[in-house]
Amino acid sequence: MLLTISIVTYRSDPILFIGALQSLVRAVEYAQQRCEDLKCSLIVIENDYQGQNNLRQAEDFLRDHCSGIFEDLSVSAVGRNLGYGKGHNLALKFSQSDFSLVLNPDVMLDEDAIFKGLDYMNLNQEVVLVSPSGVDGNDLQLSLCKRYPAVFDLFLRGFGPKWLKRRFRQRLAHYEMHDLLSAREPVSGVDIVSGCCMLMSTAALRQVEGFDKDYFLYFEDFDLSLRIGKVGDIVYLPEMKIVHHGGYAARKGLWHIFLFASSALKFYRRHRWYWF
Image (cartoon, rainbow, N blue to C red; front, side):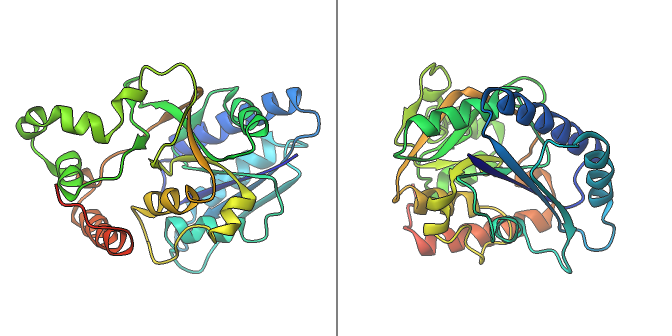
């Protein structure tokens, strides 16, 4: 069994990035101890073609801690910032693996996360994408699965003031699938999952030609979820656990708000408009 893991970085927090690599190594070692035929490849794409601080971090850490763990290991910088989806497409372009794990550089995997995900997908061949359960850095539960969003839902979640969110808290809970947060068993038929941690069938990923290259940042995971969901089932797997130190676009400045809005426009044009 072959697994390809891809991480795309761009000026990622160095402490979180090292923590992510440490957790990844532990999770791979745990999985390999229980699946003797498991072989893993790791590809790190550095989108910061000028500073390349994460590239040097990855090179140093992997050289010192990953002897014999990965069948193939590649850390490379590209000539320009490709964006999230294109970076992962580049990493997965020549992959011949059975499964692909797309991972953010600020995600910490539980030790058994990879094993749990692979074991479930091996036993359920109709599943093409698995999403984990997650908490943030303050141990607050995250909603990594979503229903198809209305434009109002996106505005409310990303930019709405607290008083407005309180007024529409039930609507937000429906969109963010809060009904899954208490689940103890796998839940199938999910529409959309977060791109911070996506475990996928590589064959299905190839069938839909990976991430859409026209998204630079934001909504590439929404788009991929909808397309790959036509090939097979998308499942929320609560026993596969992560910690994600992420943030909303509205907290990252005007440039990120612009990217969010332009990607949202592409998303709705390619799928369907749903205002409220």
